[in-house]
Image (cartoon, rainbow, N blue to C red):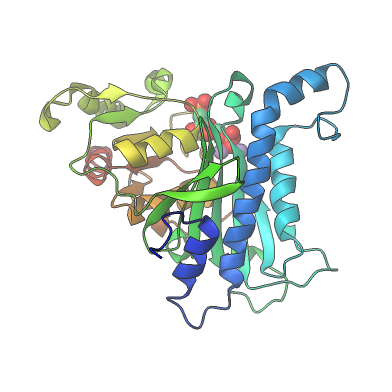
Length: 334
Ligand code: AHG
Ligand code: MN
Ligand code: MN
């Protein structure tokens, strides 16, 4: 019988793992566990409106849980999906100041998971797409339980990176360094099915830019020149279109599929911008590179930045290589 065209994310992960005979399977299990967590979060996100209504009248939500912030809910779902599996040595969440250890009652493993449990929080209650972002590194310390050194690794050493976008459909997009692949959740069977194999950012680049232009007056002059250049667009055959959703995952997902450049620069009051390196910029940079694009701080590749703290921020220029190169060229002129 012809191989069925339905490829679940579990099957895709197992077939990718077969290329590494020495693979222990732990790494694949982490990705599968993340897919499970994504399904649970997706269900809650899709209930958010109702949960909110039920919560407001003081009742618990339809699942009988106390209504809680979706960011915290998403973090707890991911942590509890992975804390007992024995594959991770620690975790880092945007919502936790310090690294999250694996409980002593559970075995620790060889990998580190860093994640933004819910990205685009400001869009949760206006029904605009939000997301989850994750990054996986291999433990490098000789410790059984993860240390800060295991978490503060340069982006180029990532083993895997991915995101979930909770939008008109829920999609999980990930790379393990063998291309970027997208899976769409079929809620009727609770499976992520391969829908976008080997995603490549459109080339030649399509003329979209994505930035919070309200910050323009606060940008350095060089950054203002970058936007002016894209607004004019003459070098690329015409004016650009502006698209800005305000959820990094949604803005990046569009950039990955349609092309263009996403920019969150620093400004005079926040020279390092707003977005975090370890669990926002670095994983998306890995995905962008695997899809034929790239990501820069404005002066160097995001993937070459050596982290010094868990929640450090970085300016981010992400998407079609020729536009990121152009932004870098103008910014380096100062
Ligand atoms: P988070 O909700 O995880 O804190 O992330 C929000 C981020 C990111 O999703 C988005 O690109 C950015 O905030 C939007 O910031 P502005 O509202 O300043 O444009
Ligand atoms: Mn975020
Ligand atoms: Mn977040």
